[in-house]
Amino acid sequence: MHKPGSTPQDRFPAAERFADGAQFVAGRLTKGTSGRTHAVVDPATGAEVYTYDLAGADDVDAAVAAAREAFPAWAAATPGERSDALHRFAAVVAERAEDFARAESLQCGKPLKLTREFDVPGTIDNIAFFAGAARHLAGQSAGEYSGDHTSYVRREPIGVVGSIAPWNYPLQMAAWKILPAIAAGNTIVLKPAELTPLTSLLFAQAATDAGIPDGVINIVTGTGKEAGEHLVGHPDVAMTSFTGSTAVGKRVAEIATATVKRLHLELGGKAPFVVFDDADLDAAVNGAVAGALINTGQDCTAATRAYVQRPLYDAFVEHTAALMETVRLGDPFAPGTDLGPLVSHAQRDRVAGFVDRARSYARVVTGGETPLGDLSDGAYYRPTLIAGAAQDSEVVQSEIFGPVLVVLPFDTDDEGIALANDTPYGLAASAWSRDVYRTGRATREIKAGCVWINDHIPIISEMPHGGYKASGYGKDMSAYSFEEYTQIKHVMFDNTAVVRKDWHRTVFGDR
Image 1 (tube, rainbow, N blue to C red):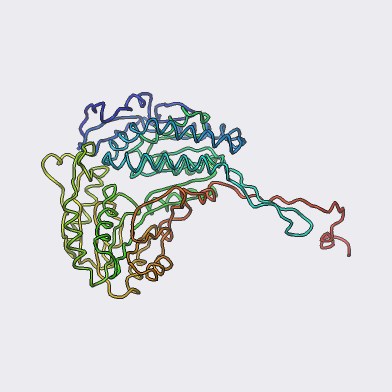
Image 2 (image 1 turned 135 degrees about the horizontal axis):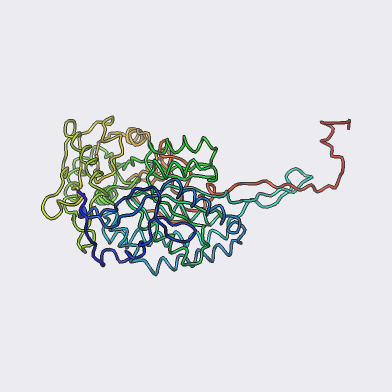
């Protein structure tokens, strides 16, 4: 399906920035040493846009060594110095916003309006947030808790962080991994997905151009089996942060446990979208279509399971299908495009497989097909609504990661909440109602790391992101992310100047 060819300058204006390779170690681009190459493919056309040498174990070792060398000075920098560097970083990314947006659209197939209005501005905001948060990285205030001592708590950086980011939001996930780590004084080696390394590399280059010291941020672009596993298992890596599927997360945990690393996992999701019978139907329909189709459904928090109380069910199905049919598939760089392709033809075929198997036990209300004509070369799939599936069916229980929404009815509020909780996952959810008591109950009883009320998808830098159950543990974004990236140290001073303490009698002598 891949077709080699040159990419027009207007689609890939930052192409010249990758001439020296796809590994970024100690402040400069280099070529990978695995002996194998990989092509970044435009999923809208199937054309190869950038071919690079994959990282091997030696590249990972070099990146970890660079991060380890940079760690003492960066950890010793004052909060103000790290904050100033991050403010400069935000300014450089803002200056290059269009380059970032186009590179992200090119490698992922995202419509430009998504990368320009969501991915890139959200990333700039994340940098600005952590620039401020770096100055507020405090422990507990001093106090005399034993009576004879003064105690306080220090937060200290952990060391070298080895992180692995996914292909669905390459720029934002690079930011979510890198920013809290370096704001807290750590250094980092990030492995982006080999499908989508371009914006992670641009991000690291922007950091260097902003004056962040060489070795603080390093990028190794290789396969998960070779580069990823070597990074996670590296003895000089003190912490691993991974975002991806639950199955791969289990493998990452196995490797990290062998070297007793700190581990942060943000894994799969199967977000419920619970519509009670007093909800604003039009708002719920619009929210469901937007929440299910953002990023062509390749979002771990996307609305995937709509549970609609029986009085609204038929109208919800009808109106949601009608609205889905108005969504415009097309070239990500065309102004009128609402929905681009999936990230690859393999991912498109995986999604189609779920839908095709569901035809034997459920009804495909709309979609369920690949478009023909001008879009036939790309990894496109039409927005799809499925009804009539059983709660224990594959399309209800498994993460599809495509533009597919499954809708099921429920009768009582108890049933709706029970169905929402009836998967292994617990990353995100939403509830739709005009009744404050109903929505309050939903926020308490739905087991997910984020519960939206009368909306679905918005995220903000100040609030944490992370899941329950098989969706992992730990938080991205917000000040809560520092819990992942700092060591807590208790410091205790004797205040008495007494040579022989009263408690010494438990070891020698009498009172």
